[in-house]
Length: 209
Length: 99
Image 1: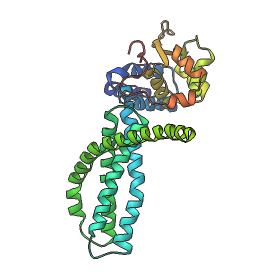
Image 2: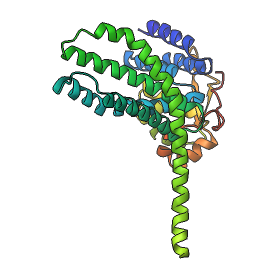
Image 3: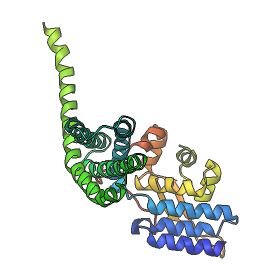
Image 4: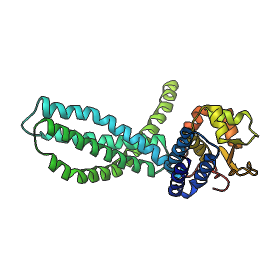
């Protein structure tokens, strides 16, 4: 197994970012000191995990993307429930303008919230954009999945149309996210600053009276 | 954090990864990503062993930097979860020797 593991470790080291290759070489060196197959497999796992670790400069982006994905996925749960109820349990003849408007407003708020969550985690201009793109893609994926399930449950045959529209929906939501999430981050930052200001000012004013 | 504590226990001593794994109970698959992250944040320095056993390759040795020692002494759990400031405003990031 050692020979195979060594070759695999070498392959992983070669594909590592240049700044990480020293770690790959260190793991290859450790291989000579291990005897059990399990330890060798662990070294290989360590190399793979090291290879996929984001470089430090991207830490902020990765963290903001994770936050955004969590925000988007959480926000999708009530929306999916509402879509299921209105399409399967209590199906209506057609989409109401109110429902369509509500859906868009909810998506806008979710994308902005993703940007705010990213800004709270990491400073900088880029993380909210990354967060917005991530949230947009997560919403698109979950949305397409939900509509596919609803279409299937409803006995419709719209899935081919849905799949054809999927790339466009993903691109649209990712672009909207890239624009709206930074806006959400700014609004959140300003709102928090204003709130902090008023929390300082109001007690001082009431004490002065 | 076990790794920080193990490294801080004898701060002047250079340690092998295998030794750290045995001490902390962490397998290599978990230990090395932790060491990489600590080094990325400037808390760990690494160098190649100077006189390896005959016929065996030199291994990496690790020890905490001053920053790493401060981190271990302060509040390692919350401090290591804190993200590095973005972009590139964090502490120095020494790479392992020979990397």
